[in-house]
Image (cartoon, rainbow, N blue to C red; front, side, top):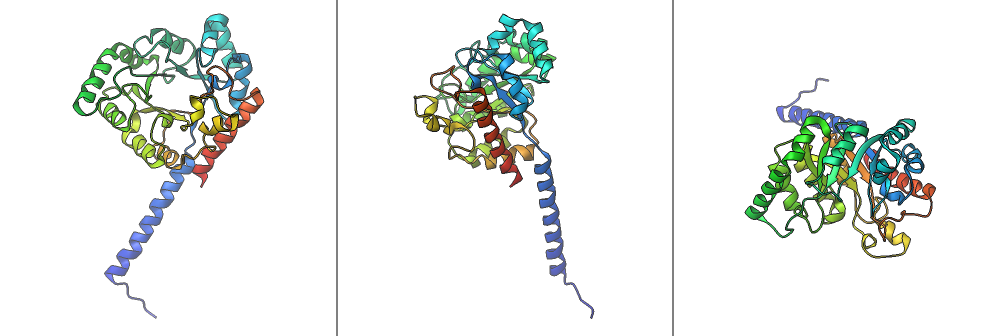
Length: 308
């Protein structure tokens, strides 16, 4: 029996084949991408680098993000131990310096942090900080304020462009970058690929699709991602099980859209599982083993979103 294909039938079949191929390519793309997880030293409170660095491999991360007081004390250890000894510790545990939390010096005083990045890290070490300024700006005043901020940041940007590291500005409450609009305007006005956004869901509406859209719109301007959701336990003392709701997989925020967007982007920057304890500077749980297990559980949750 001879089968005759109409033009409509042929086009429908071809579209189905192409659609299946496109879906297969997308699934292949997503399955081949794995987050570049980085370990926050602050989660361990005042534990020392010799205690924390062995946990990097245990948590499924490959790099460390050093936090200073009041969140941690590991950034200060570079001065107390000396650069050479810290370098030896990093090499011993096969860990790279992937980030430095630079909230204490601020965006306009990064010279010393770039120096550390040069000594212990590489050109992709991310310096995360904030943009001081009025959090109520919108429209043209917001654009003007962002341009003024970037102009004042230009000496640091030149250091980053010379290979000293990468600058990531966190969207933080009570700062110039605090809203979806400010993130969109900031990333649109950037002229250097060595500065961008540290995307912090904790400080944004808890909407997974919105977070994915912000990451997709920002594209390569996303330099760092905090895998942290909002929780009242970040600012007030609550029972531990409620404080831990900031971690991915424990609270109500669906990280699926954001993780799939990062996979589509083939995002190469650091992804940091994070939360704030109360008071600042204490470990998030009672022992190093418990902290590592909690981080690993959140990582498995995020990885599971990609697998599904």
